[in-house]
Image 1 (cartoon, one colour):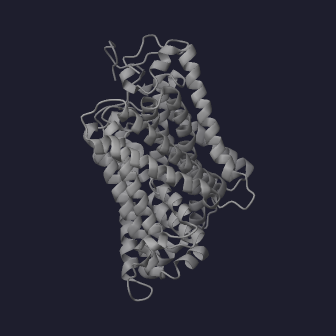
Image 2 (image 1 turned 30 degrees about the horizontal axis):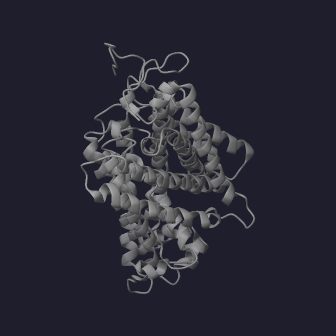
Image 3 (image 1 turned 90 degrees about the vertical axis):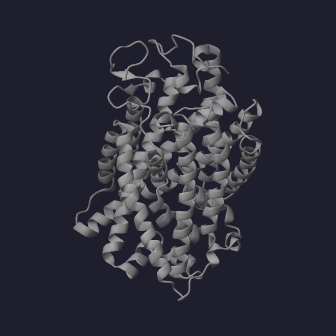
Length: 503
């Protein structure tokens, strides 16, 4: 698309395509990133098995309420900050540019762990199914590479093409979850529908912090509405509507599905059954109630949900890289988009390369793709996003505290401060129970090493932000500004003209 005074399309631009996505399309990106089928089949049963508590349905409601509280200030600030870098831009504008760069580096690490980790789950889940159904043994990495190629191709396409692809997969995924949930409620283990798992008492116990940490994983991606604000139709309405709708829908879906599972197995037996069957609980119930065909269909939709999430997270990570490149905090080549599709082509290619390298590394070394790539990567990535939520919540408080705004005190003062307090408590609970979330044996270094890595990466990003402030002040001035800066880069990547922003 033309930029500046250029009369015709050039090979690349520095703008994403505007006016492409409506509320429904943004919701598809958000909900598919949350992988509802994976959460219902895997996270829910892991929560029951790991903690011995039956309160995970309540845990989803609690986290949903917390994220709704956070979203009040989050979407209100979106009126003043429109940037594909989302958390990065919020932190830069609320706390300061160096901290914003540090937050961006944490975001890149966390979202990469989430996105690339999905290839491990995909391959390890699909390979046994293919062998059982066809008799052909396909290595996990062969399946992962096939999906990687699809994700890489879609990453270069227009954003609305991705949205239509995700819509098809998501509708089928949510539909099967609802069908299985209703079936579970119609087949109660004890002949009566028990609501014991919906009582707050079911969340009380030594594992309550772990349950809340696991519940957070079910909502990862809810924040993506602001990532697509530049590409949305009427973002002032699209961003808040998509955010609120996604959080509410996910909370209700997870609560219904996890409660229905306790009804079908029996509230007193759900923990033991989860420990014995793990991910297979949902599918064994489907097979017993609705037959093998429905159970097989549910397993297929589990695979497609992972594919959809990989596509969604790829788009999110690519837009973070694009935003940083456009602002000058990363090489400017990452801040260019295709004149044909307006997709962040260079950033998308880099993200695809990272995924390919990780798949090849795990294939060559023989490391367990499900435990070491998906479970460790996904849990670590979830922690990174939770850290970002806390920092962003602080940034929102500071942003509204420094100026005079027409919005009411509830959305600019009370709700943001309350969100900080609650999110700090949730993060603390997750860190205390991080060894349980990872499932590592006693004495493992991972429960403290992973949070430490995030701390080091964040500090390194802050350091780079300070370097920019001292050596490249024009670039530093554009950090977090997004499309307002209208950046242009010369050969050495420095700004040819100052940004049209203040701060």
